[in-house]
Picture 1 (tube, rainbow, N blue to C red):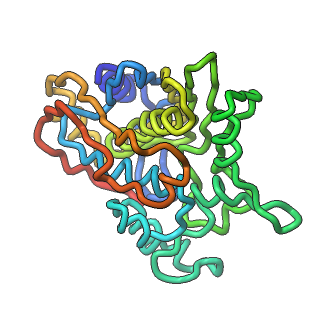
Picture 2: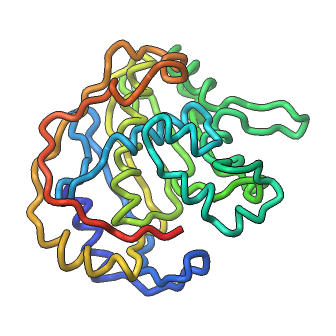
Picture 3: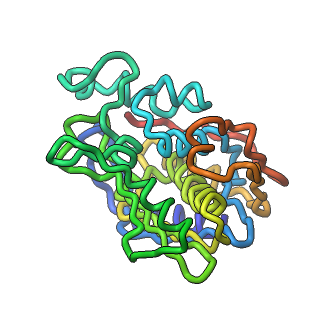
Length: 283
């Protein structure tokens, strides 16, 4: 919590106002933020200075790992995070690549599970990483990237957290995740949970101990209509200790994640929190 709150305060103290053309709003913006999550100590980085709905964050990363391209599939898993971008984004609604209601296009997990090669075949980046790590192999390129500039126009949103780089040292697995842009009051709480869960799950299904997860954010920002709530409400609250995350030990393979895992396979223990804060969401 301290590093989360420190980042929020740093944006307020050092940030620069930038106009965002997509949303039509100004953002108080800071370049370069680094966070570390102690997966090895099971310190789940769930924000405590407001109530956070952690299941939706985990559902979203599971959907990415499955390669989902439809908001309805994410809703079935337990998150509505893609409803607006799939159905309320004017640029996407007028895009000829959009297939219809709830279609997200070739974004995030689609790139991770079926990156399109020039010859028309696809590459499953995630399967290659899982196979290597399960054999104890780290070729210094165990990289899962959702960032495909050649297909930006074929999706409703460019990926924000775009690349995940796994590193294996002995029997300990580490993760470094890169994010180009982050709505800190709303998005970061989701994103940091996803970085944590991604490392925890990948370590579990490849037979390794989880180490630390490192999260690098390039453009960290607070929208102008979020600033007062962050400055005058959330930052005034005293944080509680981090809770713990329990993952069903029966999840042993990528196939398990693809086929039967639900939010019932995750449990948060010891979560104490302050009242919710309704931050505005910018589409």
